[in-house]
Length: 317
View 1 (spheres, rainbow, N blue to C red):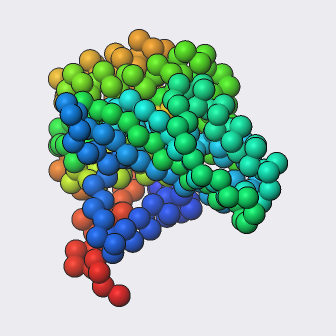
View 2: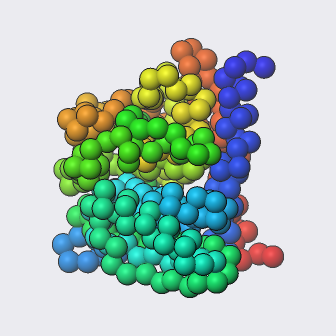
């Protein structure tokens, strides 16, 4: 088995990749999985964005301050991926005691301050197993809907490469290494692109890594793609496999018309972020990984849905 095929196997076998497939259960509740990071509700001259994240209990228990920060970072990434500006965050916390709760809330306040979003409310229960969720509202004039990506679009990957890995190995945080003013402005790159209509769709790179996150966008759009691994921006000294499985503070995949790809990179590059074309969307319904002339199939959406139930299965028992 070649190195690329081995890499495909490792990506598909990660718990985070497998966990995304469980999102199909939402179909049984009548929810529409459209591949977007937030719900977009018409409001005034644009759309109100609503999203929410739940943090893994083991992480909340063992690393309460980092969990609090993660609750803010993940929500803001979801709003930014829609081409929106965050308005406010609300947290819902259960802590075994006051000392634990204070650490979680300290992490929330720290990250919110760095990223320039207000914590506008929340709920706290003392006593019980640790649990943390948070929700965020935002606003977008022209939301970046995943379903708008189309065959022929150029696939772009944008990252903040300033940062370091924290405990656990898969989280790459820029909060300690990038200036607060830059952290607050980085997401405006996506707002610029959305408002100008330069890109069709975007999705943040989250727990399943860049390939798993891209696969969710492709499923919503009904497209396939080849992800050219050697073109993906990554920090110096970080092995490719580790970067592919990384959950970064700032990372996005975008779909842009072929004639606008260079223009779509500019708002990121102007801010000192990394952005580069790394593939092209097609009609195949398959996500392939490429390295030079080699190709390996990661997923065939026509053979096996990723986050959706097979047609006719919704509501079945």
